[in-house]
Length: 389
Image 1: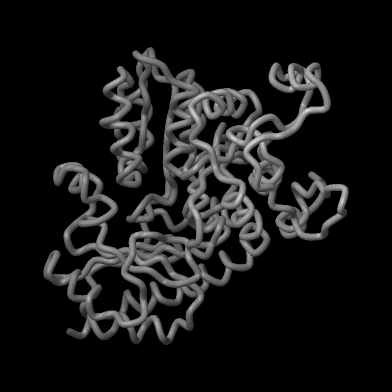
Image 2: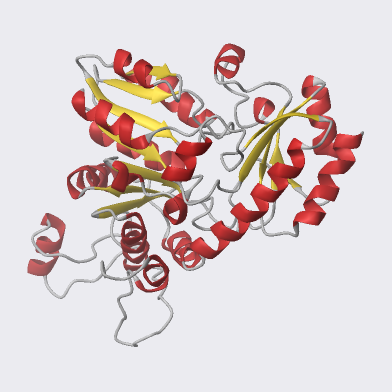
């Protein structure tokens, strides 16, 4: 279906109707599949015959989700996983071994930093974290055993925008592959593979589902890399459930519409926040004040739906704003149709060291808002209460 446009792919890609000729995608809740003969079973298990074997690594509903997301990202293949972190772990396990080196951008999601900096380090995989937008730092970090560059753009929570094409060139020159966490933008706003990235990872829990219902993740990219990820998933089993895949599959149908609407509201809210006396700084790529605004407008279709801002008074001041809200949900999840607010220093990035938070620019006064689909006037009123206080 490569000839179709994004919106058509979002509702049509990956459909394989059963003998019942259903119009909506079927949900196959089964752990295993029956074979017509011993010979067919042997052929399926060996890979000589394509077809479903066991739901840990093959399921028609999951396949539909994978094909649709691959089409939207412009990738050759996709592997779905149980969560976004499972996707990153699966990519690391499929592409790295003891003694290898990773170059990663600072400001990654807290759990991602923990995975690369602590867990993988126990197995002899070294990670160098570099300032997200410093291209010279990426070049200087390369070592003889560098195998993977991992970046997140826009970053969480400061929305730093990284030049994907430039980092891809640096990674490839050093003999490494580039993986981009495209969670904040999704393929509706940004397609890293077209900019030179080798792999895209997703927390499908966020915008791909879009309504805060299920967990899921995905790795999308060229078939050689994705096949290695599939081998890991088949053995280790960080698999997505067919039900979760079905929910995400349906969420993909409205992805562009939601992203455009939420991004438009986010821009309006960010402009309003810049004018509030209680706000010291606003981080949003769609604002002219954002240091990478021009790059964001070239690389993305809009600024996205994440707005972060700093208030005075440190943690006490930030918590006052959070606790004054009556409508906005106090939760660390994002990508929902319902707007959420969180204090990164004590939640999403609370497990990393204070030094690491400081290096990433995550202050005690920083708040992150993931803008949903509510009326912008109601969002302003809900935040104004705490900002005035």
